[in-house]
Image 1 (tube, rainbow, N blue to C red):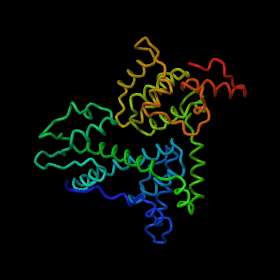
Image 2 (cartoon, one colour):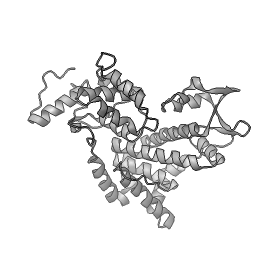
Image 3 (cartoon, one colour):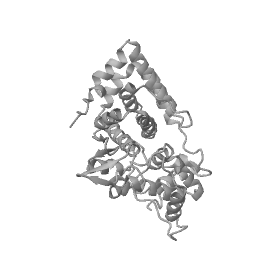
Length: 335
């Protein structure tokens, strides 16, 4: 292996403590850059702000402090897109360095004018990106490795970045995080409050998004941030939105932020799930299915944590009744 993956010390408590307490101009810029990036990430219509490269560790700790899944996804996806843009402007050697940093381990072959990568690594991250050129069966093999161009590699690295970032987030101790970031708690609590107020109903017509379960809100946030949702998440969101009364055209508009959006394919998929083409109106999967596919985002939501809840549509129906009458009924809740 040509390069070792860098030590994660820059994401450690010691490093974050140093950034927070340092009086150096460089560290002050890192603090300012991280807060500005998160502030602008709250409004998806803002021009994307490119934070300092060294701000990433602090950004992840700040996201752990704020601890709102939908906002974390939006911020990480925004950073992911910025990161991919950076890669497109970097030298071949620097792209190679990033690939090793995030465990992709791609090497450039000047004779073939492309990168070589282990097929197992490619398959691990390419499944997160839609499109035929990201399927393993469509790749060219050479001596047990696959040949890929720069654009494909950039997307593989960006997905590896997301996996690494979420892994780091999961390992940040919440109590220690609050203690270490207490000097900037005022700014973070303000961001947390604004993140809670994020609206998801801007283009949902008459559909009441305030009654959506956390999983659907999470899928909506990811879709609008340009994330290529897993098939199960996409199916769940489309079938749910159809059953709560959204028109097919409105559902298709949600996916227009995807970097590889194809109107013909999206139209076919939406019309198939809603029954316009297939003749069958599919229902969203039950909560147990979403949990088994790691697509449940219940957190501390009291409805999601209720024993009677078995289905996303139950959540919507219950919350609608509660909102309209103030007296929720538990009759006929099973779907």
